[in-house]
Image 1: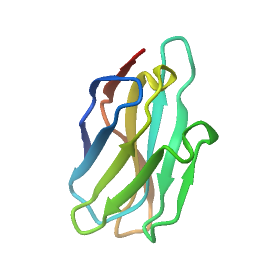
Image 2 (image 1 turned 30 degrees about the horizontal axis):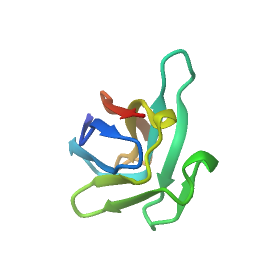
Image 3 (image 1 turned 45 degrees about the vertical axis):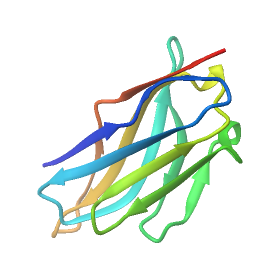
Length: 120
């Protein structure tokens, strides 16, 4: 079982910055892709950014140029640096990780979510 714990959310004014962290713990064999999703009230959960184990990244168009994603493979931590935040970025942000066990089976895990609120 793998547990993901997010931290770093909070309230920030428009134009400000926040850094989210997500640490994976438990019985870990290999963490592959990691990602951040977000869900605003009344909207579907959407992918914000993802990063492979080899540090290849993808971003939603709405955050390109403002957000960056990075990871520490040794510590199984993924980060999301959010800059030039806008009120539209307000949402619960969820960490996602794809874990492979020693038999090659992959399982997706989710964190509990952290609230990010951007005031205008």
